[in-house]
Every structure is written in C-alpha cells, then in structure tokens.
Image 1 (cartoon, rainbow, N blue to C red):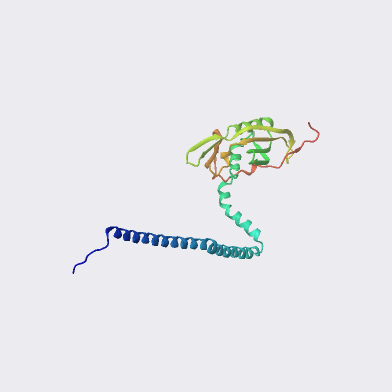
Image 2: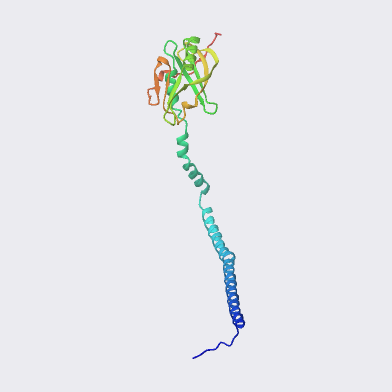
Length: 242
C-alpha cells in the first residue's frame, strides 16, 4: 500500500507547534492548580489547625492553673521546694567556722602569760575576729598574746591540691584595756583584741587546713581536744581602785 503525504511541511510544523503549546498550557494550568491547593492547605493549617490547637492548649493551661491554685498552702510548698533545691549548694559553700577552735588552741600563750576568754565574735562580712579576754599577768600577757596571733600561719591545700601557706591575721588591734576582778577575786587585765583573718581559714575550698606558730605545735581540722580552761566568766570592775 502506498501513502502519499499531501500536507505541506509548513502545515506540519504548525500542527507540532500547536500541540507543544497545548502541552505547555496544560502543564501551566496544572501547576497553578497545585500551587493554589498548597497555599490553601497552608492557610488552613495556619489559621485553622493552629488556632484550634492554641485554644486547646490555653484551655488545658487554664484548667491546670486553676487546679494548682486551689491547692492548700501552695506558696509555702513552693518556697520549701526552692529552699531544698539549694541545700546542697549552700552546704558546699558554707564557711567552716569550727576551725576557729583550732585557732584558739594554737594562739593561746603558755603560762605564766596564759589568757582566758570571756567572749568571742566572728564577723564574716568584714572577716574580723574579736576576742574579749583577761590575763592575770597584766600587760605582759597581752603583749605575748598579740605577738602570738601576729606570728600565726595557715597551711592548707587549695582546690587544685597544691600546698599553700599564708599569715593568719592582719590589722591586729586592742581596745577597752583595763584592770578588773575575776570570779575568784583576783586582779586581772581585761581587753578586747581583734584582727582581720585570711579568708582561707574558714573557706570550704581549703583542705587539710592547719594553724601553726613556731614551737607551739600544730592544730589541724581533726583536733577535738579543746581545753576548757581557756574559757572563763568576764571579770568584774574593781571597787575602790583606779
């Protein structure tokens, strides 16, 4: 069978162009429809689903807040819980004031210049120690006591385990020096001595802390035998004597 193409080439090219244009138009229309559908879905999610979810969350929050607010002593419970959460931190950072008794054992002069204490105070803000004491050997005992404090040193390990040494006291001063009468009726010199202590003394970061003064020995954190005879009642004012 013989086929004869009677359509000129120009007509064939025109038909092909029309078909290609139809495909492009069809594809463009489908792309536009899909894009519109995607935009509509996104708009529905943003303005529909999100608002619904937000409303549900708000309702849940309001219900749970109302239930929580009705709990008895809620403010006290929250305060206690907050304090409990900080106990460990406070415990790790608290000053070790028990070391002060070790200091006392180290700095008390030997007889005949022994000193007895009627009261003492540690001011952590100004890092000052104040001691109210009395001595039967008068000014000589006070001077020995002052020099003993000045010669005291602290030995300790820092947070990295290195050995450190520093002086115990600075700015040592005395005041309210006068004669009085102790509980046994004996004449004694009363005084108040104060000094600024090095912060490593009570710091929890200082480990294996010890206080030493020349030949007076060494007093460490493990020391427990605090002599009771270094404490006494305050001396009374002398009557009829300047």
